Length: 142
Image (cartoon, rainbow, N blue to C red; front, side, top):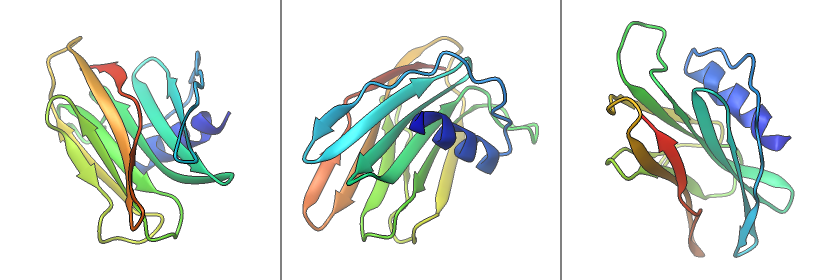
């Protein structure tokens, strides 16, 4: 599945191993020619944005992710394609991470603790000259 590749890529970018991902599922939702794939494993969840058979951007949520000793949950965003569009990841708890001003391949992460088990929503948005396309919310947990 496309989602497994993205989760693995972003988990590596945040120095978190993504081995053992199980139970990944994809539920596409089409909007303005963009398909959103949703997937989750034990401590990681993500959304990929696809258009014209190309991954445009992705977001991942990792529960207590960082191996450097910092505490907190990590939201990461990645711009996968050089097309002038930037990617924004948001949560209902106020996390906001963007690739605005950076080229394709750029990954940005934000770590902030959310109470364990607290349900929140995550979204991915693509922003470009033709407007903004936003995914449906994905329910995740702190």
